[in-house]
Image 1 (cartoon, rainbow, N blue to C red):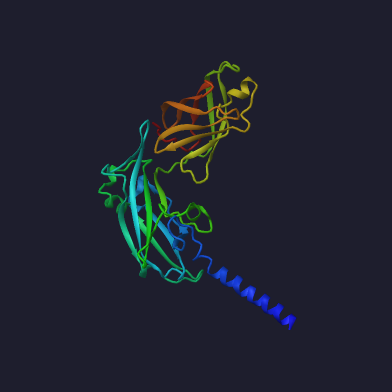
Image 2: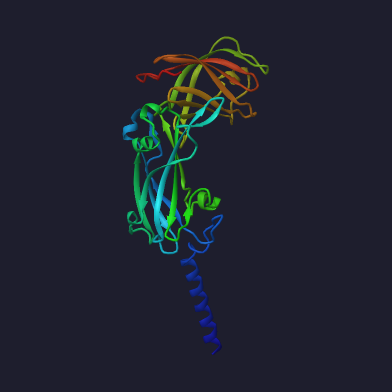
Length: 317
């Protein structure tokens, strides 16, 4: 009898554990105003940006999984909303059109758009929003769009109980945790494809520093490595383009970057001492471009980068 009670207790405990694991998604979804809720897990994002040179074939596309107590069946509708912003140098973010910074409705998914799938028990849906559809919803035209702009897409999940879930009431864990993967908010940048990765020959002159000097001209090579998940951004092998090596220091663990934003070239990052970097473009052609780099320690140099064989450079501004 004692053994029977012990075995029964183990069995009961296992059933409780299994039950709690099965229902975990429903009672403990952290929202600011709800104890139980629903969310949209991002299964796949097949488009991360809009191509400025090909807006007609650009789109924002997601595959979503509706997670709730009924495996997604409480979903009534999902609103797909958008707003458009532009970073104005020296001013900040500007929302265009300027009627307000509120987003507008682009499309509404219905409960019938969610269907069973072979990979999980939750209902899933996939959708694709062409850039043209988002632009039109905002009352804009393709001519109003500039490289470097961004479209901010926001999802609002409405369930059949009259509740709404979105990025403004979801807990940071829901929006940021890989388990939930439900940001409800997706930033889509307008990018100009850039192809500056590789090794270039350079020459450097007019170098100046309070820490050392190097007269004349330095020649050598510089390697630009594309930065993952950062379109048009390249890690530079030496932000001083040989100047430090010339006067007895070394670049070492520094991290300087060149950015190509639709022909607007800039420099950022810092060296191993914490000094930050910028550049001023002097000239640009298909064969070469010349700029002056400057760091926050007032070290500087003038550099000319030469095109690789058979690969003309873009014209920068």
